[in-house]
Length: 271
Image (cartoon, rainbow, N blue to C red; front, top):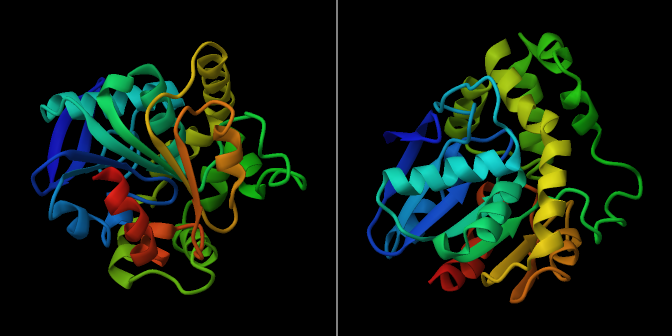
């Protein structure tokens, strides 16, 4: 593990392997350990870089800066701190919008882009997925101060719900589950997690502004599972110059639930 200065925070970063760089951006309720089964395979031929996002895991619990553009600046700062000029960038869940904006704003830093199991703000294409409204926790997490007040002392049960739902009840290895629970225990840890949701309107505006004046020129792959499916791919189709879409038979937490099918797609694409 390394601690590096990046965009005004100290980012906790797992680094493994040598070769062309691959940057892995996790989501909620995860840390860099989301990529536990992915890192060894990729590290056989790549330099794999997996930071904890702002406020999460062992990265600085910042007061603000949780919008996608600033998270993209965090990611670029990690690359700068490690002396990496460019990388294949992989984002899932909350890691997807900053990965997208990094590729839009700094395409020379992104060799390939892989986006998984998330939406890109309010871009058209996700109407079917949102026909019954956004997931219930989006609203709960968005109310300032509410979720952390309600959940403090009940973090393990709450995290377990997401881990079970995201693997269709199969769960994740106990060591990883315990690491996630530890990372999200305490009112300040929870506040930082929910700041990512509270910044979503700002992130959506940043994404709309980005695609209003430019196209995504970086070769990109959209990988869906359950529940997002092809919604992200449909959002990307009008704005991406070179897009591949795939769906895997997996719960939402693909890197832990179905790492082998994911690696079959990921390894050759980032190579």
